[in-house]
Image (cartoon, rainbow, N blue to C red; front, side):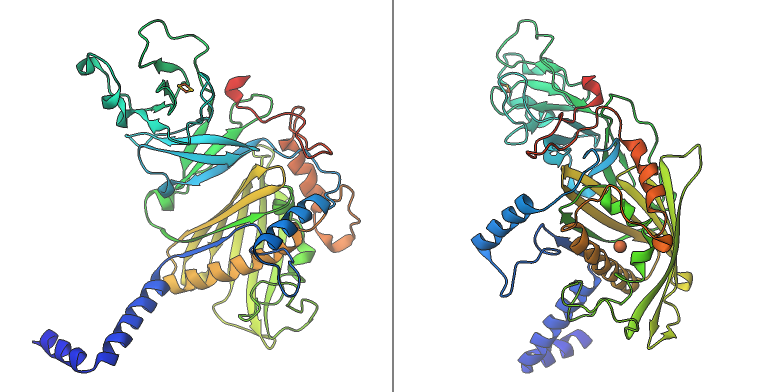
Length: 445
Ligand code: FES
Ligand SMILES: [Fe+2]
């Protein structure tokens, strides 16, 4: 009855249909978790006024890479765990190309859900698994063999697109050559890389001296037990050495300058447009932080404590306080545990993945019990503040011996701590942009 009346009303007032659809659409985009993605050049680089576009923009990007002074860099791929994919982005029976440590690798999820990482090039004649390769249990039935009923369905294999050889993604060994029933050559194997799925992401272990994983990535039980829900994600590509990003946590002095004013809606995160030197912005963040090594037993772990609140015209805004404990696990992972008082608690995972020597992919993912509107607001403001750092990182030079003063924060302490992730064979970037040695899997040692 009510529905009929509503329908009659809508039919007789067509404008109301448009308004209803608009409300549905706005509700949809408001409730949808944040997914803010900024590719290289979207943020943090200056393309002139008026801004260069298209071909000219691409050319300017190349020039920036070429002409930029990078400084005396530490090795470019520290030892540690690196995020290579968010779990829900890799379906069962899928091979996905990933870029990490200056090369393409193949990320595989089997029928039963396990994940594996292998080199991408087939040892037979070198075809690339990522372009047309298949997870083998989906293709085994198509393999030309006179006795298909005798075949075992393999759950963890990949099949090369060129001649159809099948390799175990777990051991790397070739397990079948479809057109040859002779002995499989011993060298017919592809390199595998240690990986683990944890806290809804997939991580790869790298150690340049071939050592096994030296620490574990802690599991956050509120996520495994589904107490905290996914709230949104952001992803940024930026042009700098990996160490610059975590060093930000020890650089206490920049918080009350670069991040002091709340990002204005009109200017977003753009530090060229925003007056950062205003000592009294109308809306401002007040930060108080410290950074330290967690403990001798967990020396791979650094911790930043950061308290924050907002003020408007100098008055503290109630309910904007947050307490953060950011635990850095090695060079590429930070678990940021937030306490927002009455709003709730949550974790933001920040992962940095060195895809190329000077190209980092940074992902933030939030899980919490905080109301959706607050999560969205918080993540957007966080991303804008992060983008201010992107403006700095993507253009700066690495200074080996910085000119530090008393209140700069424990930057040197952080550098000494971070240096534990470099060892003798850690790849370095040479003057011509090439690497001293290519990163290889510990299974190749
Ligand atoms: S190149 Fe892979 S099977 Fe031949
Ligand atoms: Fe920062």
